[in-house]
Length: 346
Image (cartoon, rainbow, N blue to C red; front, side, top):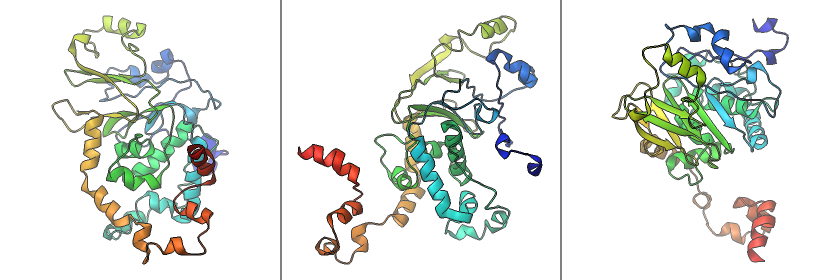
């Protein structure tokens, strides 16, 4: 099938999952149900729904760039996109032909490699192709990077925290992953799901609105615009013709809130709690911090320069250590010196 496609860029697999279905359309919102008639069928039911309507600003409208993507919908823009794409491309080049195997979690260096050998034998390291593409939108590249991390074994919640960490990121989880990925800075807000959980997250700038309401029956509604659901004329008309409305009255709301910079909310679709599987940012961060594997992995892979040196002060006394070399060893570049250090001393 792929061989018959003249331009592979025109081919985009919207969804290939047993847990979720992605509907893309280049049409007006009011005609979406007419375009996909199963959405207007009363037999069609879903535990969650992510809906995103946007107008293309920095790219020409294309089917493949219509939102949502396979894992997330993105509101805003990624202002660091050029650096993010360049670094992802550099990692792909460094990984070479093993990139597909790395993404599948087949090259972890752990004893489990032998167990996964049979499954990994089916992975085509060349089929993965470029993960990011400067010709795509920032949202498409963010989704592709997010998919790479999730397919490599991390959860969708962990992945969004890695790519969009809080400004005051502390703990083993963030310390371990900080060297592995640069921050995707917005202003940006994302709503995401892998079919197991559904959630939303803001980048550390926090300049995109995201307000949510939690109802007493466990229903959670989150939107970038307050009242966007209740003020819908089509919704009111449809509610008047049905006995039961899917949206409870405001009197049933037990909690309201909004996301702050670098914060998330998550709804676990399979695990029931007192809040109906709803986790605020404090609970999300607490669950990440409680996993002992991050501390163990950090202890295994973290190396200190002083630990590697037999004589801690030898690098200072060496004649080969010029001022520039010393700056490089401690992570200082010419821009740091020109912009920060000189301003501090003048």
